[in-house]
Length: 172
Image (tube, rainbow, N blue to C red; front, side, top):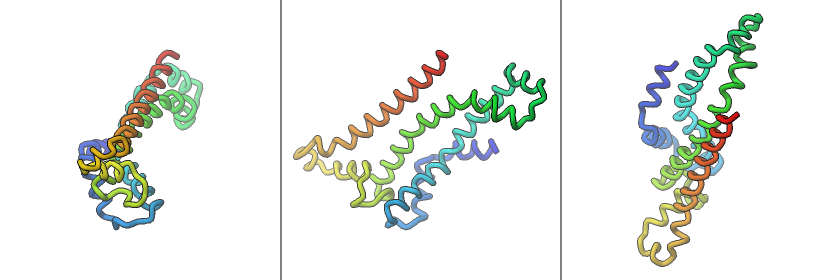
């Protein structure tokens, strides 16, 4: 399983997402297109979470509380559910939080290239594609640069929240 995960990690994610999206018609209902994009992101992003989860579980299995639980006669399933998973949940949540900006940037790139959500559906990538025209940029710079500002603030906010949660858990 980890060999498959390593293979997935080694693939260029944006190219893989573009190829997967190109396999479907460009004109889809908005909800279907959004669900398709989420599915593609999940298929391409699972490997990093799997590697992290495996490493955390292997490390937690060697800790004293797991050995004590094993000594009391708990089954492997109960040890996993009651002792290991609660102890590895925090790093997994932090990693998932830190992956959100990657998915946003991938959606922006797809929409910017014209294979994500299609006009007239609102998408940051569609709005950013309109900012390419330099004459429009001189006429109304804030209106056209606001998608870039939203991307910046979203990515910065998620990174700060993810990092702060990690620091709070480290103190406990």
